[in-house]
Length: 475
Picture 1 (cartoon, rainbow, N blue to C red):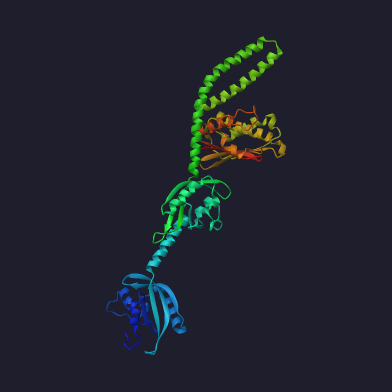
Picture 2 (cartoon, helix red, strand yellow):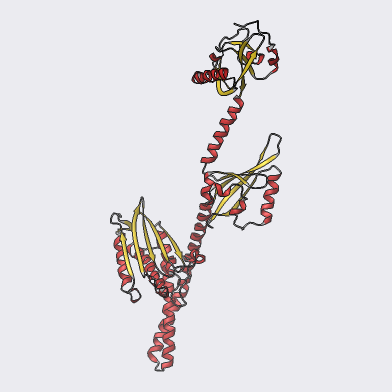
């Protein structure tokens, strides 16, 4: 077992925290220090072969490395596990050639440093890294100067920037400028003092689109409680803000509808009386000047009456019942109605209608009113865009997507300025010249589509054209 003729005093290694072994060419242990006895829980028994402790899957590699070090005289190391009484210890083995002249035998010093805590930290780090990389929430880490040193994949998706474009940059690269200096000063004062800050921020994606997030910034502290950096986690609020705006818009539409019903009642009756009196006056007068002015009054009364009818159409509940409707047939009829107009004679109409669309529960006359209104607006937009000499075309498409039908109406008209896109479904808003439109058509269309549990949206670029997208549920 142990050779007592070794003249070197190995007790020098008893003060080492690492396990130390003197091993001969065959791997037999000549002597070991106290740390080895304690950690291997050997007691009075003394082991013979060192590699009996090495995990079986690594044993061959550890032995080959040992032989190489023994023959070459070069140090080497390997990470493995030592088996100790039904348990494993993660260790880093280092082989160091050791010549004992007193014993006149070439030996190898093996040190085994316990790296169990390091391995545990490494595994924890890998776990947290995978969580950070794969979470849906955008994450960022900045240094004390505010420069980003880490962003996860979700942050790249949310911001539109790549990781390479963001590292070592200040988060102000995607700042919207909507928040005051005092807002950010308060955040820095909070996190610099070691506290967590939470707030809602508006940022800009790489291409300028806004995105809203709830931002939580937490200081990263070292073992002494000193701030070494900052960790930020974002929760996307963009959809929430969009839904809030849609809710406000819907509530506003409902309020206007209630108001419209009252206006229609209070104005409709006096207007009918005025119209009757004008007709009586026209019949009894022979003065051309008076007749001309009465005609002007009558035309304005007719215009007001149309506005009132549109208000009533929007505000009063429908008396019709839903019927299964061939939406393609309704679209085709709406196109045919619009095509006969003088403004539409030079316009190309393209229909791409999916034949597999099932019949939808609708009121055919009302949904046709929506289509005609959109098509007439498209015709007017193209007529106003003639100076650009573009192809005059209106494309209509229907398709079935899962549990809904999507209808798109695209024109090559003058388009709508981006600042006006959010207003197109509001009552009395119009981009047409004065007297050319009441501004109620799209408002009424919006109400009709919503009454069928559908949705209507608009996409447009000035001088390029406009697309209306209508989605209707199949059931």
